[in-house]
Length: 111
Image 1: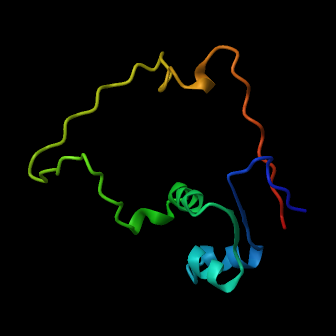
Image 2: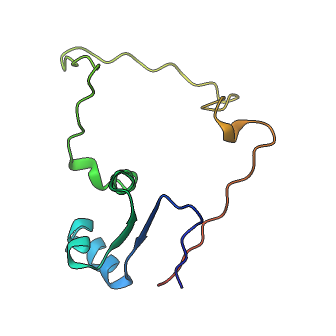
């Protein structure tokens, strides 16, 4: 039985049969939605973020950022500063604060 997390931003439901065809490359998520084999409960922006997190959108050109300066492909990019492994990547984020709650475990379903 499927049950979404309380206050879930997005719930995606499908079948093992669809996932078999998807992993074989026979069809995509949008095909599944169009055929009714994939149901989505949530905002379209949440769906797009979910697709991006799965790597599905790698072939789609992102929308331009208004304030971004165009990059010159002939000019090398600035190297990133090395990280100190002793410091958290985002020290100000709530999950890195002392006493922060552990994340809830994910529940999986075979439905």
